[in-house]
Amino acid sequence: MMKNIIGHAIYQLVVIFFLLFGGDKFFDIDSGLHVSLNSFPTQHFTIIFNTFVMMTLFNEVNSRKIHGERNIFEGLFSNPIFYGILFVTAIAQVVIVQWGGRPFNTAALTVEQWMWCVLFGAGVLLWGQLITTIPTKRIPKQFTWGSGPPDEGLDATSSLVEDGSSGSLSQDVKRTGQILWIRGLTRLQTQVCLIQLHNTTISQQQAQQLTLKRQSLGSPTSPTSATATTSLTHK
Image 1 (cartoon, helix red, strand yellow):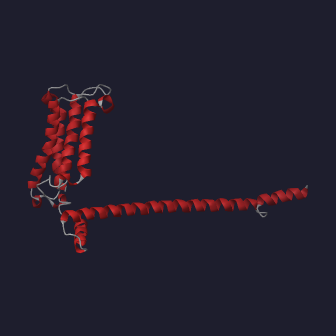
Image 2 (tube, one colour; image 1 turned 90 degrees about the vertical axis):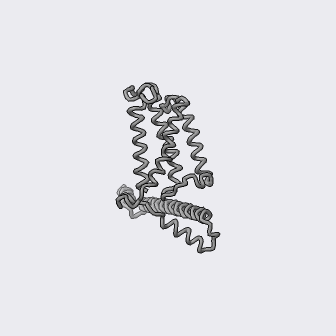
Image 3 (spheres, helix red, strand yellow; image 1 turned 135 degrees about the horizontal axis):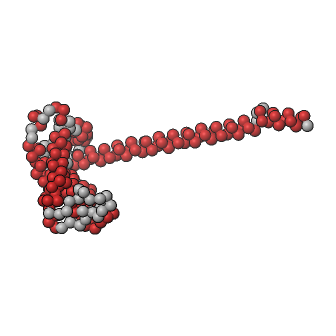
């Protein structure tokens, strides 16, 4: 896990700093480093923003395999939520960059600039394959957190197989995910019930205190009523 995080951070920082300090010369555009705060959006900073988003999108594909697997595209379209988010994010990014204007502080890019942004983003995939080739055994132990598969997921999967499931890994993992979702929802419902119970208890205590206060004010032995009785007697 740490190998992937540090490795991809290095790639993204190198690309971002290259575009920040040399992007204007590389694309032959005006630099956005010394423009005023309220000036119009520049293509320079828009390219940096767009490249960062492209690297993030492609890195989401890399993040599907974090234990040394080579084929990161395996089962890519088996989860509609995952690729739906990818498509929606990509379309929203195009709209923001091309027509965002001052509200999003972006300037429209040319086709060539878009191709370079996508190319820098797709470089994350190749960089991820390079990171995978680095042996984990040569990395210091302080940077090997998350190097193995999660024990909880394996235990849940093995228990499903023992309980009479089909034994198919994909189906068992899907059932494991459903079980984890149900557990999360159950815990959330329990927390909501506890909050409601706490609020109900506080309301009841406040109502009891208010009732006792009213009774003490209306009691003949209270100081207020005793004072009123004494004044009437003297009169």
